[in-house]
Image (tube, rainbow, N blue to C red):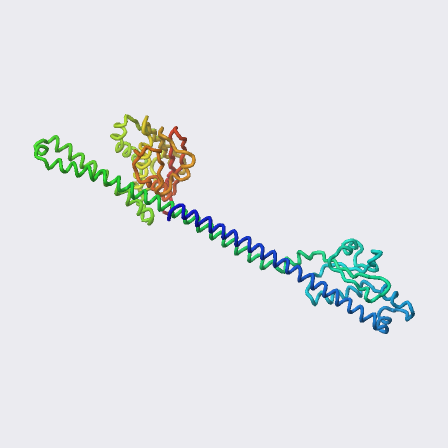
Length: 428
């Protein structure tokens, strides 16, 4: 998939996901508003039922006299309203609100609409809030002289409404988070896979180029050996035989690197541990690269200061790791080739450091340097050969031995790789 098409898909998906989130937020808000309106309607219904009870009580003068202890005289209506007790109103409101499943934490009161004076209230401190409450109903239909208002103030109405909706809000938020996390994981995974695919493509292209070079050289040298004038000269035969041998070794090393990729991916590296002298491995690697270093007028300095240099390790893999680090130092030291290999030890293990004065590594590349197929590009200069698996192999093998590899580098100053190998590791 082309990068432009992928970007368009990601943008459109992100817009659609944002739209879903906004829509979901809108519906949740609407549901809360609807629930709040339903609460208000139920509160009004409860207050109407309380008023109806008061009307029934007031119209039944015998019951009213008995319940309120009023005198049966011409001032009955006035006595009725002023004789209403908070306890009576509270019992009526509690009964109705309980049937309607309304919030239980509230205050109530009855006040004169014209004078703003309270006939009764459950809590004096809330009289101001009762005057401005949204839950009020007139009871002046009972009394003709004055207009009285029954008011209720709910202390935690919003909290009560939210609690009734919290399970739906929680599930809605949870599902949104899952969708967002899924989208993020899918997009990031696709990007990683796309990048890995591009790196593998570069690896295959680079491998093809690297393998064709020694094959072509061997082919040309073989043709030269078949010529009569070359067959009559022992020096020419030696020359072309040496070229074929060297190129064959080069080809073998390249094939071994490709096989290392499959081995590491499938984790088929079975470590054959034995007492391995790190100093001996370093000296062998140093001899192997001496011809290459001399051709570049360079130098490898050995500072082997480890008091204890023998560790329990797979000698072949450790030697390959050291070879890869030296080879990496040579590749990225185009001028003033100077490599220093040093060791020191402590009670736990051996530290091996390979330092060069090459081109160094930029800060943004350091975190990727040990990744599979990753290569540091040198701009328009393409003279650095390799498959981008050497340092990945080194890190994998070192960690398989229970060790650790670190890198210190400055662009234009050079790099220093430090490997720690413990003397022993209980399990592989």
